[in-house]
Amino acid sequence: MRESLRQRLETQIAYETILKKSTKLEYPHIIKLGAMLCVEAGKEPDPARIKECKQILKHKVNFLSSFRSHMERLVLIKMSLADDAEAYIDGVLAVHKLLSEGFMLDHDQLAMAATTIYENCPAEETEAVVTRTCEAYQLMKQQHRFLTGTEDMALISLLIMAGMRPQDATRRTEELYQLLRQDHVAGIEAAQPSALVLALSDKPAPQKVRDFHDLHQACKEAKCATSRDISMAIYATFADINVPRNQIAHEIAEVDEFLKGKKDYGVFGVGGSIRHLIAAANVIEDLQSDAVPHAVSMTSAVTQAIVEELLIILITIIITSAIMASSHAAHSGSH
Image (cartoon, rainbow, N blue to C red; front, side):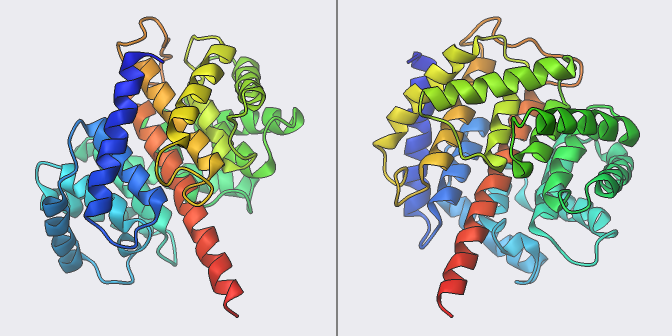
């Protein structure tokens, strides 16, 4: 294993330990996501600051807000990493208000889309980006009424912020979706988010789908593949990585083996599929760093910042979905 990758993993585990000591009854999924946020920001978690941010958030939104549900810990950590926590949440809430105008109900994923746009969009362009994001969402909703949901909003916003018009983002995503479904590469649950991620790359659509399939197959053979659900979208983030798919799968397997022996990464923690997801995320982040020269060939729509945001969005969607599913199962079992 590359030393840079090992250091990244050891830092993540250390940050998880800090976060576990600062909270009670927290889902292990959220602890790991929080640690990843801190690693990417290059800042050690600060439990005291997170606690201060919680008080700020309580004064900004009521307990029914999506910012106080499964998204709360993520928002608190993002606030704690900001130079001005109050200014950060005020900005995010302003974007959230714009996004929410077209929806009757508040949704957790709209909160995530709001953080994505706030962090990556110049203030003077925010309103236009929100308008175009909502337009693209409606176009996709018309094509796939039951597949398109608010969990897609953050990914759609990245396409818009990459400079695509709503019609172009919709057309490109639909082309990739159809290829993924025709080749049975991705299950019905994975095809839409995978298409949205692949759409960020300007490589030819058939090549992107072939590389996506090859990486998933290589991971299956290396016994480090995610479940055949939305988690598969992680393989789409490697679209512009110019490294043989078998080599990538080998590295993911190495990281997976490293994580397997760590607390909360087993069957009674996040489980194998989420562990494979986190392993893949660490590998792509390391490949994008200077540790591996010439590994990345960026196309016009993609920057390293966008890919980093993309990884956090995907992992957040997958982890919050897993938490909501387990919560629903527990609730159903109690009746």
